[in-house]
Length: 430
Image 1 (cartoon, rainbow, N blue to C red):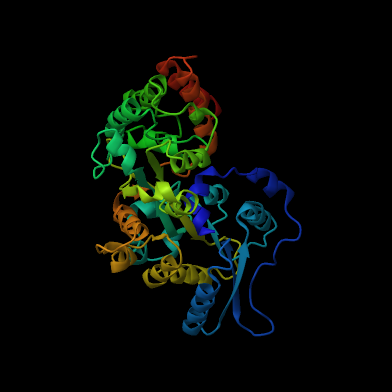
Image 2 (tube, rainbow, N blue to C red):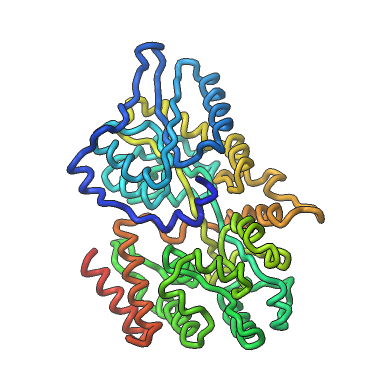
């Protein structure tokens, strides 16, 4: 469901696509086409774990679409988050795919590699394409094709403990804006309080995203390693130095995002870099910490880039009603419907018009911390993008970089040796 969205999106592990394409599938949903009973053009729409929270929203949205398209019929099927990968791969392999499906860019790109998704560059007009944030639109691109339409988005913010800032002699109204500032804050908090300032984790994309924000380029135009340069070495050095100076917990080597949240809630971590939805977790699990919690914009590097997690809707090429399916995908993701959707859950829209609504731009002196967080998150959309873009074997690349970075942190290799080895490992397998 969306509340799991930003924390789960980059932590998914994908089963073998080629295996499923070879084996086919059993028991997959029948491909939609004309409903013989009604004579209407039927399309099937799959989402990821939106029931029951979005039942009314989807019922109303589908009714609105059918009203505008009287010969259409839409069947909504909601799939549990953990089952979507297997089910969509199975259905595509068996040629029984839904007409419209809700995926994330990293997974959808696996289908796009097999030319299994409609190219939206040619399926929709240039004016429709321009309605989405340009950087968010790019999240669904692979080899000059656009394999989906952006739907809902999340951007991380800085959640921090004002009390620990004050104890460290820091201005609690001025959280760090850059990773350079974060180093100085980390040193002061450790020296004055004995606590850690922050902990990004390697169970997902956080650490690698920070390196991209610092200027690291992952791949060149030919898919070869582009990170073994001055910017890449500086990004490696940043993390190695933090670890050597004991400015980040050793758990970064073994623990995930859940541990960072636990440490923050326990008052052992001054800063939590995560999605706004975790404010609710802090309030429920650690009310004393919540009382001294404040928020700021996402910390970034020299590039000024900010990280976004994006969910999309794609149209499989196997659809027998492609034109209607694309029309529905556009309707689902238009400005008005995205605004209504994001009001149901604490999410952001991918359309420029939706984000300009007062809901995402205005606060008052009485606004709650969640309302302020929403406005901060939305204000970051023009600078936000998927920092680890869809690419062949991108999960393997992340694993290689993390393995070598950890060896450098543990002083088993120099930083330069580690990044050179990472590049060699990737290039030998790409």
